[in-house]
Image (cartoon, rainbow, N blue to C red; front, side, top):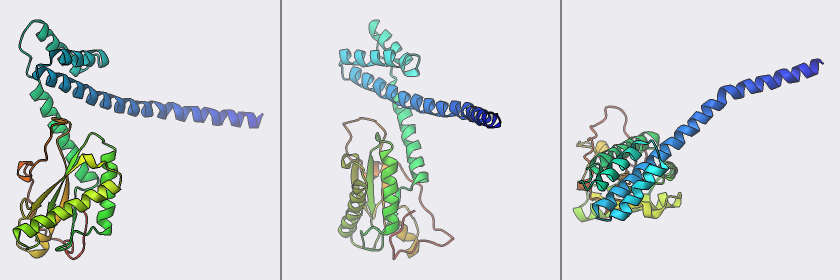
Length: 265
């Protein structure tokens, strides 16, 4: 009997623990499902509005109808209903694409901040070199894992070369650095068609200073997340001048990375 009572006690304890943690796990999974559904609904709604703007009304109606049927009760479904009702009344289509694009742009900014905080967005190079060091290789592998977990994201790699060379030489070196990072990302499993490269040369400096060690921060390649899902299939490679302005890096008062060695942050 003591053995039986002990077994019953253990079983009751296990059931109690399950009762505590199971709802939490279910809630987390359910939250993730809702987030994924929200992204799909937004994409479908945008596709429908794109079709209507291209005067493909039948296709637009079909896509908006899917939003209503597949995601009932969602904000996207309510918007789709309003657009369909306006079409039925022969009215002009409500201009909701700007709202959707603003939301997607905000989401892209959130991805960029998370990418910077979680893994880092750039690697640094030794002077007049495009060789990737050990720490940089580790960072790039982490970048590839982070991006592969978010398959809707595409990136542009911006190579920079403030190494004191001529304009053409700096442009060529910055291109080699961008290509080196792309090769490592692809080797780490990131699809090549998700990557573009840009050679900035000495333009678009991140560090505005005269100290050689501080200027070494401009010898880098940055992995920059492109706009999320906007104009899918019609994107051209963004020029450095078209990218959002970055905050300049001021000289640091503490120890700086040695420029003689490729480092990653």
